[in-house]
Length: 115
Length: 111
Image 1: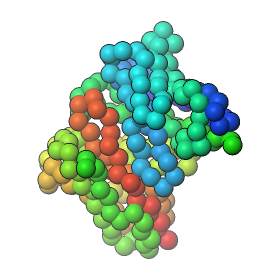
Image 2 (image 1 turned 45 degrees about the vertical axis):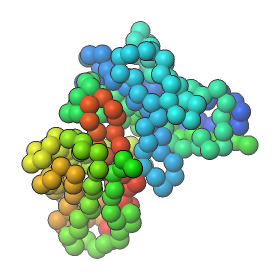
Image 3 (image 1 turned 180 degrees about the vertical axis):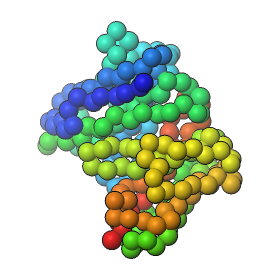
Image 4 (image 1 turned 90 degrees about the horizontal axis):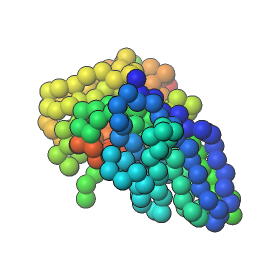
């Protein structure tokens, strides 16, 4: 069965510092992986996705994530945090690329950016 | 603009009074889903639909109903709301490996 864990329910970084949000998954087949961001009072927005092409995936707002099969990880990074990055971030996994495959979400990591 | 539209954004109701939260998407997506988001519990799937007239239970379906009479619409119905259904609800749609497009959410309070 699929599952997603996100280490750290809350992460704080200084403005300009590296952002690293961790995600580990379990899946019985090569997965499709996603990161979503949720700003206050808004719905979730897709940041980036891994669908078995390049292992380093670039997304919106300067974020990127690297798929590491050996570590079953898909950590999200950004070289320099901005105040506007403060939000909740969700990692998600799907065991297939069709419309009908169930998506499992991680519990989320709240990112705070300190001026 | 490609989007999922939910209404209302905020709703306060009383226990037992039937309500419907509407959801509409303009992307011709086959798959639509309803989630509830609660502190500490993350996102939990309530119901989903693979296409018109095809719906199925998610992880927490008790107390909810859905219908999919048209491809674009996927309303969530609470026949007799109870306080434990106070939550933030999201409708979402997807196709292929493209990831979900989410609505802006409906914050429901049942008193």
